[in-house]
Length: 116
Image (cartoon, rainbow, N blue to C red):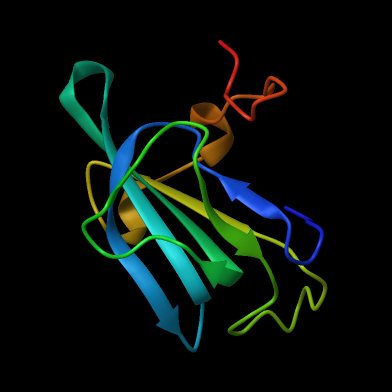
């Protein structure tokens, strides 16, 4: 998803960060895991960030700013600032990929909190 360089990246739900680091592919990224309906585990990775404001194991709240948009890592096919969002349900491999839009709110209030 396209973004403004340095724009705030906001958590869409409560969770913890099992991954928050940098690598050559995703660049700076944060992964947030949470338990959703039916006890399923949803892991959402936000990649190519300029700044990371969460450490591994820390909790984030819905609406909390946890990073800033950038173009780090192998962002060569989209060189402008953007956020690569990947979601996985009940696993951490390609077979567990799901559409992240199914788990993200479409509206936020003036405080940055997701609206139901």
